[in-house]
Amino acid sequence: MSAAAHAIRRQRHDAADRPFIVIWESTRACPLACRHCRAEAVPDRDPRELDTAAAKDLLDQVAAFGQPAPLFVITGGDPFQRPDLTELIAHGREIGVRVAVSPSGTPTLTEERLRAVHAAGATGLSLSLDGSTAELHDDFRGVPGVFRWTLDAWDTARALGMKVQINTTVARHNLHDLPDIVRLVAEHGAMLWSAFFLVPTGRGRTLGALTAGEVEDVLNFVYDVGLTVPAKTTEAHHFRRVALQRQVLADAGDDHVAVLGLGRLYQELRERAAVLGLDAAKRRVRRPPLDVNAGRGFVFVSHTGTVHPSGFLPLSAGSVRKTPLTSIYRTSELFTGLRAADMLGGRCGRCEFRRVCGGSRSRAYGVTGDPYAEEPWCGYVPGSFPYQRELAALLSGGADAEPGMRDGSAAAPGGKENRVPQER
Image (cartoon, rainbow, N blue to C red; front, side, top):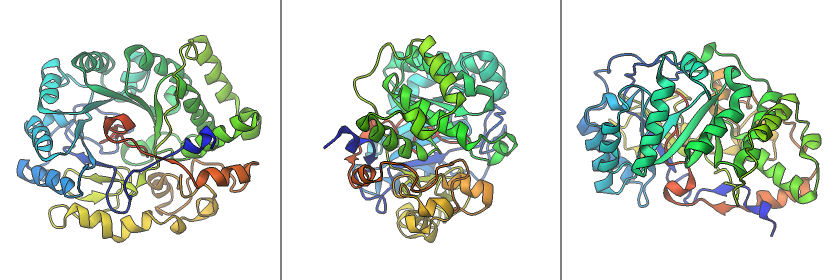
């Protein structure tokens, strides 16, 4: 069997029975004013938030999925706005639920607090880096100083022995800066780099969309640097299609640039990466993307307890205050529908990659109002890839996901914008 047979990793457990990851928006309170914020974060906490007892009950509901329990990511807003954060992390550890934290890069992100969450049992940390310079990052985050706070917290967490995931929102302001961001990831060290492709929800509605060609160029760049740093995407499920295509083309000895019709942006990113020497220290193996999507291995719980297939897909399937999370995930019409590939419309419904990709259901909803519509940021024409026989053989195979933080989704990219450590 070719190495391409392991281009995509499958979830170890039935995605209809239990999620791979649960993201909890612990609060919307946050001192930042990020231009793409999903939660439209506010300065003060909402009195309707799940209190400590309700949050512990949510953790118990996650444990009820069985062992090993789904990864539980505490995000926001800024989770450090909650005085019970370490208490909740410790409760998760006591009941066998792995907890990761996805804080905002603010002055609350001190060494003392990082030591506290680490001591309480947090398995990892997820931080956002949206530019390789303070000028780019701080402008995007809306507050000066965020870049420095983020780098300091990153280095501190690494020194404590914490696993760190770095998340980058791919937008017009940093399209050409991506190789320099990867250079920082390589220099400072991270368990995973995640390229988050914007979903037009919250404040993100005001940011310009990328073209399908630009998205394709960036996805292939992310694939390339996967041998320099462990890399994945968020809300760019067609990265799994790209991984399959690139493996098939490599086996065939064919030129991916010509076959896939990659453009000038890809060439520029590749040339900049070469100048930075990103290909000088290759990793021995590439990290295959995990087959997870909204409602299919992934679930989001809001600060008030409502349950959603994704933090970027604001359709509710119920509330953990009234119905157990296990029941909502396994039986609600919204979740079961999103797990049915045959429900997809447009090109996604006709695509040979639909069962391992499925497109961003969040972006489809954000652009069209229909969570089953075709992926707006994908230009692939179903059936147009020239190696259909080889592809069909690969689509029937795949490897299991690794458990725990080793699979890379554990540091939790989540919450109010791109900080959700899942593979979505």
